[in-house]
Image 1 (cartoon, chains in turn blue, red):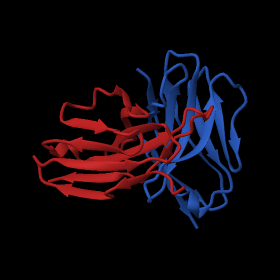
Image 2 (tube, chains in turn blue, yellow):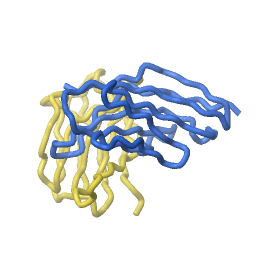
Image 3 (cartoon, chains in turn purple, orange):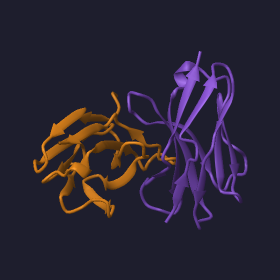
Length: 116
Length: 115
């Protein structure tokens, strides 16, 4: 079974600074998708960024970028120019590519605090 | 479109009681998912529907749990004879298989507390 591990229960960053959240995963599959979701106090999960395993290029969405290391099974999220609105719980998630349905396997999450 | 709606937002019940939650997906979405999130953990997949058909159930979904999506629109999740271990947030999400990336849209969840 696939597992996702987030080893940092909590991280802090100063406003306007950069922070990196770590994620590792375990799978025997060669084709899959990886995601970072944000869950603010409103509780609604919001997709931050998506990476396809067969693409070597790291995904980028504005201030958010990933460092995808397939051989190491590592998928970290970098948030640049951190803003107060970035404060939330962040979840790393995995999904098999050759599977019917969008069933995600989530990590335990990292709480991100942004200091002003 | 108002997104995925879940009702109620909070539910407090006594052990042994039955509870039912409702999820209204985004109107054009044909897939609907239920996840459960316990305190300090990430969401765990419970079940999903393609239109009105329930295509997969997780082993986490005991016999006390039943989900329906009678007309392929809204869905209900019922828990019978609730136990304290059922206390969690129940998240609903929807998507369309016409989207190549099949992006999931989540609701704000129903927080269940079993006393």
